[in-house]
Length: 80
Image (cartoon, rainbow, N blue to C red; front, side, top):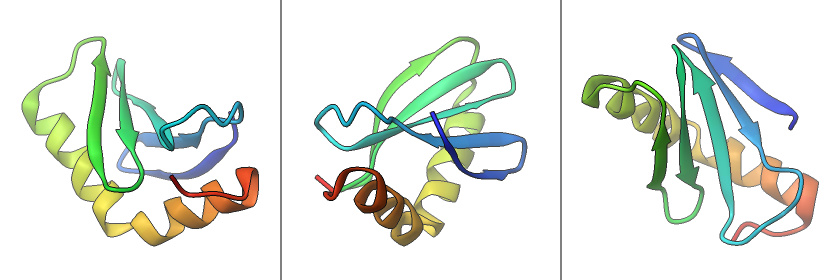
């Protein structure tokens, strides 16, 4: 999976298989969070994650939602 960006120790990666719904995987700090791109929502949490870490991932994703949607379009020609 190609990394879109890395921020605060989290690697935001787009799923290259294009499975619906549009989502990305966020890896870092010993676990993973799956985030739906549009509308932005938490999909799954794997590994040791505290609520503060999940909130931080969602905050970063919200601030970069336009870039996430663009990356999805570039890889799959779609956003949802």
